[in-house]
Length: 253
Image (cartoon, rainbow, N blue to C red; front, side, top):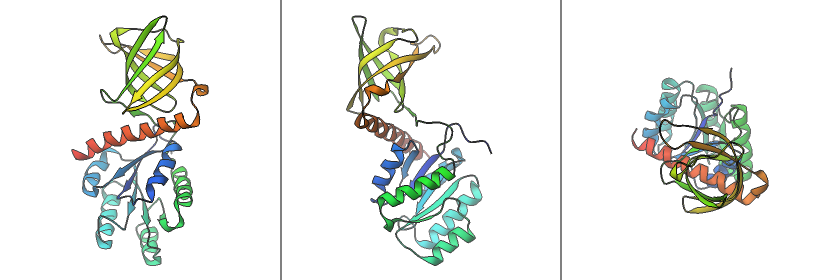
């Protein structure tokens, strides 16, 4: 089976507080993760993400009988969607039902084992299900006014709006229709994204025209300009932008 180039969207349905740290770690590992606190809207929307993975928290949202019906419905309506179970309840009967009878593809995970061990198990599960796909970095499409970039170039102060972002690079439109050559180095760029500031250097690696509008420049960050703290901040921002976009999608479902 061909591995998806874009990877899979991973939803945690009614995630308990203990999973916040775990999801942060999965985002650092470049998995595309989301929280969902409305199982009905997610069920209506999931057909748009046919290869998604849902980790359902049995301890919240519905009672045990309700979750059995819900999981069976997803298995019937969207058979390509992977389902895993998370719970604080180490119940052998429940484990057997979901693993043996419903044959959920992504495991039955007991959260009491701790955040680091849970992250390790989830990471192995996601790797086995090829959730990262062939891509190395999760990308976030940036709605208008999400992020800006400023940089000095040849004596001028360039200002631009981000159109997408990853921890490896970004795409942007420079104000005033300015067009830079591929190979142009931009040093000490100041990125302001969702109120947070990140400094980085990069190089223009591609440029594409969009009709009569301002060209979009693809800029890859210089790895040497990003320490671990800056890289993690970028990954967190990608997660936050994607979550806000998904919240808007689910709100309309």
